[in-house]
Length: 301
Image (cartoon, rainbow, N blue to C red; front, side, top):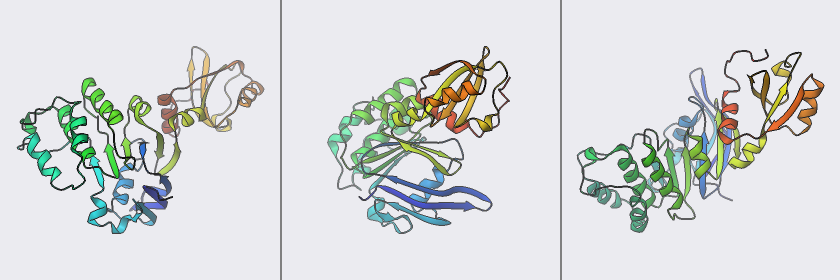
């Protein structure tokens, strides 16, 4: 099966900095794939390599079945992009921008445009300079989806939007009919958005791939164990699957990855009592993964 995005051993160095490290990823056609990672995780570098803006140090990247180093204008025309700034010519009216954009895309779907723009209160005769940030976001999304791209990259598209504009953006994205072949890459730090829209969750950390599964499957990998340790918590580097721990009113809340119920027996064998397993939501699970290797105070007390 041809993937929408495929990388194999993709590595990129900038001097001494390793931005991507042996990064191998396959994304099939269709669906919404969320990419999550802290600053410096390598997301921007990944997009630059996929779009042919930069060349890899080693490894390969393929976009819509084509080597990213040699993308033709026709292939690039199948990719849509909406970033956090929602930059548009301030002197043009919304209608003028739409007409201009439509002239470049023979596959333009006016019904899709009308459907998406309906979620936003955009006056088509208003200049962009007079539109709110949320209205500009809606205009950008409407045009991007109407182009019927095979791949649409949404890079922090709701950043800076108020709650009403964010709600409109997510509803437009979820409920607008798009081509079955349209693949959406959604980058966001907002876990409530990821939970609502994502079919797949991709987690990047320091240029490496940490997860590529459904959000539910990822949450199932993480468990929280609450226990008391009268003689002190075992050393963190000896705890299987350790992610993080918090001491709350004398009880240790330990988050671990890829552990079964046998982990409770491990805790008891290491001095724990009153052991209980609690559910974990997506935000907590993702944050635990992303902060695992960050410096933090010792919580064994």
